[in-house]
Image 1 (cartoon, rainbow, N blue to C red):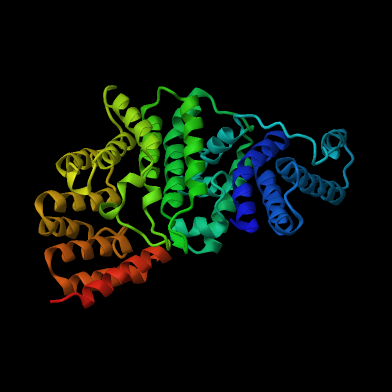
Image 2 (cartoon, rainbow, N blue to C red):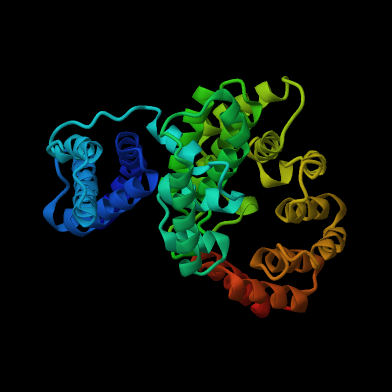
Length: 417
């Protein structure tokens, strides 16, 4: 791994820890986030050439606090006020510990940061965007890609979200039990999106970003320790583990994508599968099920099949039927259409896809064309399969996805008739 890649990985790991510590001390999330981002930029520029400091977390914390004190000094000078309150505030921030002093990070800081990013004053979309940026470590451009909006639009959304949190004047702390209940759905969805971006990158040259999926798993484990009796939190963790277990077999030696039914299952992580299956088994003995628990159960069916042809597709279809009862989700409907095709044949799957053509949330997205192309290929309609696979390749922003789809097109075009 290159020095710059090592630095990127380290900074992504340290960013939420440092931000949590700075926000706890400074009590201004917006200012803390801005200061930490500046510290990260400075580190990304200096560390690859000058070397990583002995205490990188302390270095980032030191630089971030310097940025805040510089801002405070400028603000005090601009206002030219020497009140007792401002003097006390300045005295508190005038001292910045040296970068080699060990930074004590509260184990709950990152979790408190996670719940703050899902503040009730924010829209659901803004909460997800802010958390992807502040906790997940995605850049504004990557977050914009996840939401399919221009980078400038996402930058404004994140800025407004930070200002809304600042205006709420909420202290940086773990929320109460009532507050946790109100925000938990948003928190779980955010973690789900961070994991998905890591497991299957929405854009760029890499098929996956293991650092993001690992961070999502780490945060979900932390959340489960806080809420051990919440079944959906456990379900989400199981889903992540069972899905991430397949990552070693998802790509070939050249980084090319390998579809699930062609993967070398001996390369799957058996320890993650065992842990995930155990969690699912416990959940299915606990009463009513939620959306993440059902998705975890679907993943468990896939992971426990010794061969692709051994997959229990009728069970998967039944689980998707149950999953649709929780929400009108076009992505779930798309996956259900695949399950229908596997149980009842590709023509039945194609019929099911027509229900999604009028859904603006997914119509025109590459995955719909990709699935349709795959089903036409199974049906033997080569021309339609090629047309839809090529359309999907043109729409995806992921280089490995595009290459995989174009390779399928080439094989179909040159296959004997």
